Length: 124
Image (cartoon, rainbow, N blue to C red; front, side, top):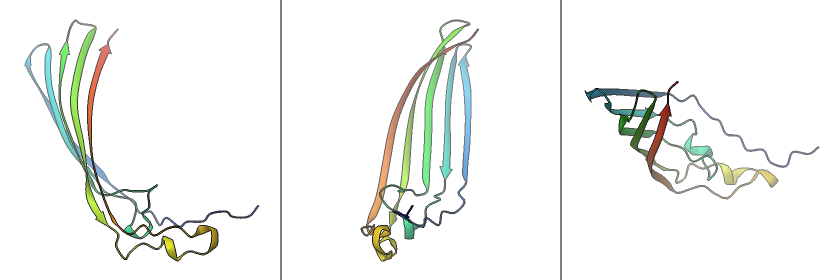
């Protein structure tokens, strides 16, 4: 059939790194944390609402408590910060022809995500 939509993405390689650690102040309690960073695979020229991406910084801070030899509970706070991306004048999406033409994605994209994680672990 006919091509209905053809949007070149020109994605590039991205990398991610994480560094973390833990301490046990008592036998059944673990305090843990980590920091991480990933780069964006989406160039500013092809970013749109479906591929918003930027360099991100992650954090984790949590605690794990062993209730018994076979069951533990844990909780952590995990923020993710996206560096702002300003695409003003760099978007190519409006330059395409016919059905591939998209609205301009010019603008500033930014985001911060906050997550709370509560979980249980069963060992057997």
